[in-house]
Length: 368
Image: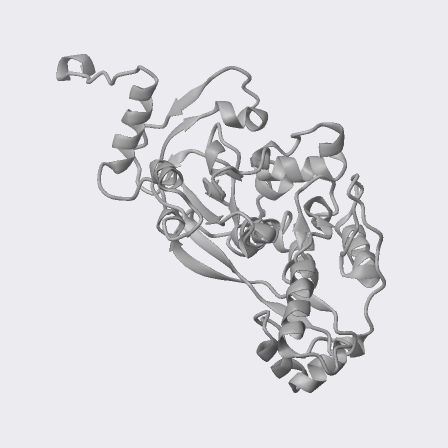
């Protein structure tokens, strides 16, 4: 078994070659690139892709033009060049599978709710400490998650078995991804939920729950906030769309697991997946990717500089996206139904009625 020391050694080897840029065993493999010299660090990060922002970073417009070999060009030409450089910086270069160094099966199982990351709990002897067991997460986060665009998970598995990463295949049609949890693995930490789970059509997630027939679940939960759910949404072709797997890493691995300790999927559902595969719930905390770039003061290379911010309730945020239709917004509102009294029960009953089931109300005599 690979030890944690070996895993960290692998990470350091990859980082010294390319800050994790391009390492992939899939058909989308990209060659490792040499690490940039320490003297060629970017002057600032989080820049808007404008002449003024980049000029301020390198000192002046004249300095920017010289850096880009555009001395004598007008500002419109410089802006057009920056637009191209920023677009190129948004091209994925790292397979999401490679961020764990554990292969595609591990990542698939993790986002379904399994693996040691979900199942292990620290004991009185200090074994199964999350900070040690998942030390790869903050290392990758620091080195690459904000500065290199992650590609859809593959690791060769999806090439051999199309749709292997079924959680995101085909591409999330609604443009929304959520993760929901039912436990916390941090020592001396009680589970704190933020959502009720109402009902689930298990058929779209059959490659996660391994039930190959049409099936559904009516949770009929009696306890408030019995799940913890977070998510993000994006318009097609937007910056958020381009960096969605960075956002997944930020949300599912760095924040929800490593920092907050949330683990375990809702029964019948994957832990993380397109909203279409996830349960009907009352609420999901919203995370938004903030567009930004950096420029190398020596080479003129432009990279993404991603940050994230809280955007409230996911359904409310989705309703503000300009690229979403009324039908799409209505659909999301039917999946994230709000936390008002009785809304979860009403949504679950509607779900059952759509499948030609009606509730049977027990009488006092039945209960006896």
